[in-house]
Length: 360
Image (cartoon, rainbow, N blue to C red; front, side, top):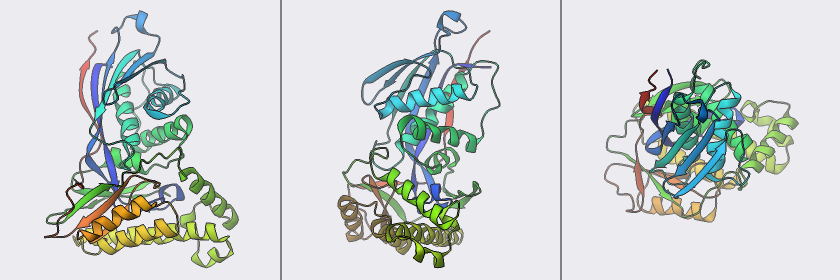
């Protein structure tokens, strides 16, 4: 039975390690965080056919901005409106009949900080709109299908060629766990991440991160070209010995992917043992590779990572797509992060908050 009104929450994510590996068929180890995006949705007019034109009225509370559109209308200028229109449009394309509705969007996840506010927005929107959908309704999508739908929003409606990492982390997060994701098979495994006396923090570099307008899409093109030259589907399948035949730039991109996959495996093994100490150097090595081989770091990100290490972090690295955003730091027992850093902990994944079933 469709809901009359509903709330849905989707968390942001921190990727412990495994950056730019998702669209390369590699491994990643993200976790959901407590902060996220909440969408409150209400169907207009109940069963009144006068409101069946599938028109959405949306408001972004933190920006005090509004949008109103017929489902299927694109928004060419990016921003939150493109995500809202894209999510509704993709659900309709998949056979879901959405009523006219009002949406209110809020939350405590900073935009452009590399904590995946965009994926959290897509997931919260999708969960809320699915609850409002009218009969007959297709089978509810599982996590992979829903993450894929949300990824199409970013790819086709927003213009950012992201993979599935952020959406799967938001959907599948568990308290005190990271999620080991194999992007070649889409197999997922919860891995204990019990911090105890250790702390994970994120420090905003102060440089805004925008996937669609940064060099992120260029990296995807480079990786696709490297795969074409090597005759493989994903860079994670590459043989290290074959990389010498690639142009230098493409060789560096491929080497990052292969070495980052190895770091993910090592990190997951350490977490299963309950040993966080090895993570420090893994984070440092990941940052060096992202800076020197994948070339997605910036002076602001490098400075933020150095700031965390100067304050006693066992390791620090940029997180997210790069070209701005935040840096992750791991602090051992007795060490103190800088006051401007934000502590993060592995938390539960996306969920519906409440719903009021439509009376018939």
